[in-house]
Length: 171
Image 1 (cartoon, helix red, strand yellow):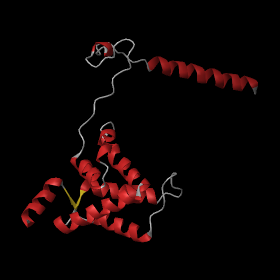
Image 2 (cartoon, helix red, strand yellow):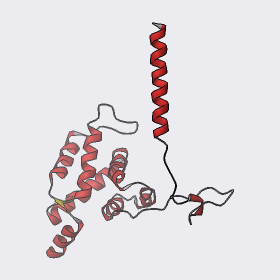
Image 3 (cartoon, helix red, strand yellow):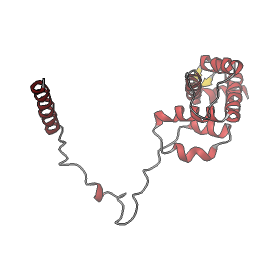
Image 4 (cartoon, one colour):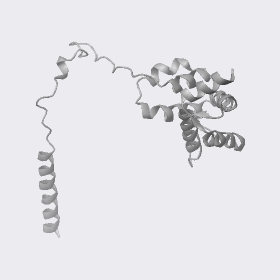
């Protein structure tokens, strides 16, 4: 039995060493990070990564819930993480969720649909609400609020251009 264990152990280490040799990455021809314009000077902390452009739908949502000061934080997130992060914020802040739902109701009345980004946020809210155990600081949504959010998810998704055209045509 000891010989079998030693043989297996030897095989694992030799296979691991061979895989590690193949995993060496050739960085020749790559740009030297110390030569870039954003390189940190000796003794100073590295500069923060550059902010990316924010989605107009996110900016509209932040303004509608009264949290426009959070735009700087969202600028450091990858775009695909913005909707889940905003839905997490809404689940932690019930008054912001109510304001966001009022905005969605106004959009449906004015344009006949809802912004696709807002619709994704509502889907993430329902997904968070459906977790068996919610993270600290979150409470389950009431059945009426969950029903209203389900209606927003089922609403017609529109682009910002379509919404602006629908609003312009009615005024």
